[in-house]
Image (cartoon, rainbow, N blue to C red; front, side, top):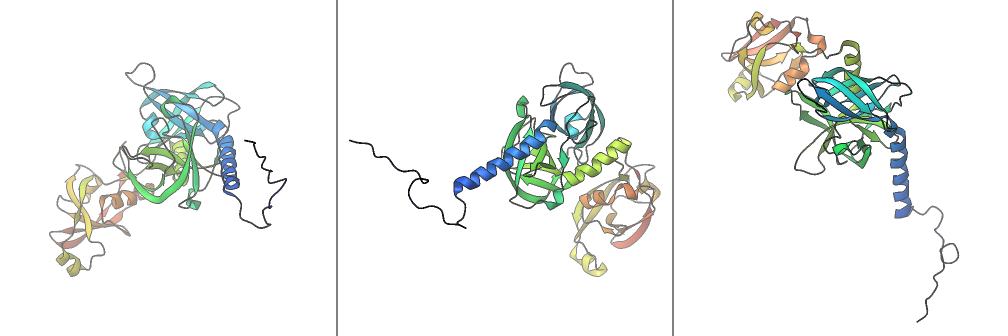
Length: 333
C-alpha cells in the first residue's frame, strides 16, 4: 500500500476568498495573543503576600496583591492583611521585600500595602464601569502558593452584591468564571488590554465558576482614602435593626413608597440615635432624601458625607409617621 501525498493549501486547492470570515484557528490564535499580551503587561506587578499576626509564629496567612504605583503602593484584600503585624511580598522576579499595611477596609474587603523597594513595576488601572457581560477577563494570583498563576474566562454578571465578613454589603461586584482558588485573594482581574478592572475577592464553594471581584473603580476610591487617612470614614447611628415588611394598610394609609423598612431592635446608649430619641420598635423609612427599605440601604446612606450633618430621619412609631433630626458620628473601628 503506497502513501499518498496531500498537497498543502499553499501549493494546491482553493484559497480563502477575500473577505471570508477568519477560521476557528485564527480566532483562537488572536484570543491567545490577547491573553498573552495582557499577562505580560500585568504579571510583573503581581505580588505574593505573606503576613504575620500577633501571637503567631511564622507565616500566618497570605494571598496576592497588585502594585499600582511605582513607589510601591499595592492593592489587596482586607481579609488577607487585617490584623497583620508584619508582611513580606515576593515579586515575579524573585525579590522578597518587606511591606507595611497602610490601611484596610473590611467594609469593602480592600486594603493598601506599601512595599519597600526600588525599580518596582506598576500595573495600569482601567475602568470597571466600561465592562460588559461576556467580555474576556484574566485573573492572576498565587493560588496555593503557585506563583503568578493565570486563569481566563468572561464577565458572567455585573452589579452583583456580596456580603463581607464585617456584615456590610458591597455593591456592583463583578462575577466571573475565571477560576479562583485560595491564594488568589487580592490579585488583579485584568481585561484584554492589560488593565486592572477588579480585585479578586471570593469564590462560592462548592460551586464551580462562581467567582467575584471588587470593581477597580471602587478600589481606586477606597485606596485614595486609605493612603490619605489610613481608614474609611462612615456614618454611625447606634441602632441595631432588621428589615421588615410593612402592612398593606399602612402603605395605603400613608402612601409609603417602599413596602418595607428597618425595624429598630436596640439603641446604643449615648449614641446619635439615643440623642435623637429613637426607640425600639420604631421603623425607619427614610434617611434624608434616601428611602430606607432595608438595612443595606441604610448602610449605603451612611457615607462619609453624612458624618456630623444633621439629617431628617423619617420613621413609623405606633403606626404613625414621625420625623426626627439625627446627626451621625463616625463609625467606631
